[in-house]
Amino acid sequence: MAHALVPAEIADHTTCLLLRLGQVTYKLTEEALAPFGLRTRHYTVLKALNASGPDGQHALGTRLRIDPATMVSVVDDLESLSCAERNRDPLDRRRVLVSITDKGRDLIGRADTALVELNDTLLVELTGGQRGALHEILATLCSGETMPAAFDQLRG
Picture (spheres, rainbow, N blue to C red):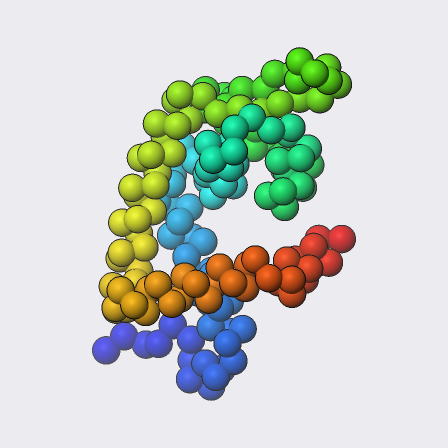
């Protein structure tokens, strides 16, 4: 018999449950993206660029809550994979725009498939309704005021 992921002694604390689930899902997401040469941060940037088009490197990092030094590293990595490119903004030559390439779009499609498979594997014990409810609750927490403010405060 498998042991519970979170011991019963602390399982009544939602934060303890979220912490452990976050640790597991982060590691498994990293593993799922590794065959594509991506990490979670690369995937996040590519998804944002694919959804909204070219954006300033600084503005993109701010929107995704990625610190400037990490953002530079992520875009460097994506450029070396030919998944993104930097260009000067034609309207403001001081500004650097980051855009996704065709290779980046292709990679996102394949990575999305891998993450859907991971979701299906991890959430197999939930009904479709439970999966939808879980997603809605987590999305509400992420788009509310409390969690984003707490994240920003911790980052200084």
